[in-house]
Length: 250
Ligand code: IPE
Ligand code: IPE
Ligand code: MG
Image 1 (cartoon, rainbow, N blue to C red):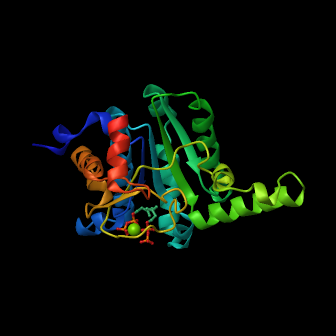
Image 2 (image 1 turned 90 degrees about the horizontal axis):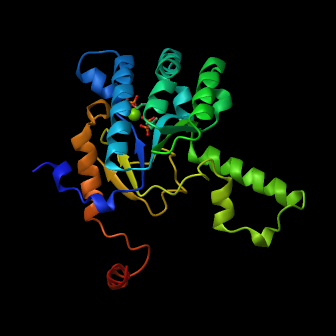
Image 3 (image 1 turned 180 degrees about the vertical axis):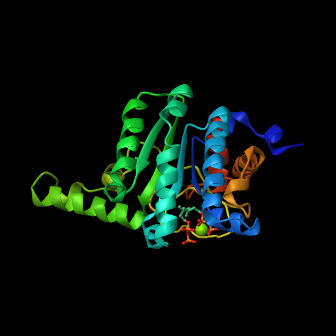
């Protein structure tokens, strides 16, 4: 039986975050240039967004370019920016009723990418079927530092009382304030690290690591990740018995 056939459709994760890793190694294994790995990766993103949406996943948040990725060779960075410009297709979001969002330090992106990106963000804002958020020039440390500065400024200006700051205040000042925390985080490409991605938001997220390089991540690979997620017990600090009792009372 396939993983797709074994899924419990009443328990599909609402929000899946993905670290799309392994494009470079995928290309190298095939004797291709790294850039070709990124092109294949863009196609895997398109397919994953469609598959996740068909399965009923409401939010997909993908790591496409980290703050640290700016230190890659110019040729690779420029190639990635050109690819981003080419693939930002408003039609795909409108035809599929998908809202497009971006999180990250977008001021660092080339202007023509920013313009096309903002157009997709604005025009897809009312789409309802699902939300695709792309983390671009993003890192958690950048995001949390920015939130801390913003909160400090409000305290300094007398708009906010220090004692009124809660974890919800932090949530509200992060770029992800409009979405629930991820239920499941998938990292492809074999590395088992977070690489500065959604560190605050993944406090209670189920983590799933697979060896598949991102361009090879297909529908069955997605279903396997979701199936694995469905086998886990999310306790949020409680005991197994308490969780069972809560489920009985539902
Ligand atoms: C992920 O693939 C995409 C980006 C970071 C832009 P990599 O480019 O990191 O691929 P590997 O890890 O070198 O194989
Ligand atoms: C993480 O991948 C960032 C993205 C997938 C965009 P990296 O390939 O940059 O991560 P590290 O440096 O190997 O941890
Ligand atoms: Mg990598």
